[in-house]
Image (spheres, each protein chain N blue to C red):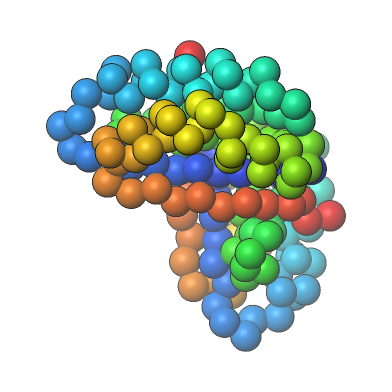
Length: 95
Length: 95
């Protein structure tokens, strides 16, 4: 199992609702993908311009398929235009 | 419900096993705390010196109690000595 944390910092002054409308489309399509266990968007309690996806995937193959999906290829570049920065880490559990 | 992502980057050359021994003590004690839903340590797939705790707490009160617990007050300062940086974000879900 793989977990992904994708932390986005929005550009100051960006319309957060515009971002969320697109993000919700990615979420609803991604949750239907094979091997997607969790795909949940979060807002930082102290900074509403930090929006972080916490993801759980069955395996690397499922994550690779997700990254090649139409909704990711089409919508994620639009999300990135509204971000100041994006930090992505892929993790495995430490026992 | 609150999620916390605590991303630590270890100092180059630090003995990771030394870090993990202390981290495992915090994990085992924290999982017995009231209101702790998940408390799982992760290693970055591309960089074994990035160690990230992904946490899930019932509410802010449970998290506050955790931060005042003996194991956190005693062991976390020792973990910090082995880190180059620590990045902590507290999150709520976006619906």
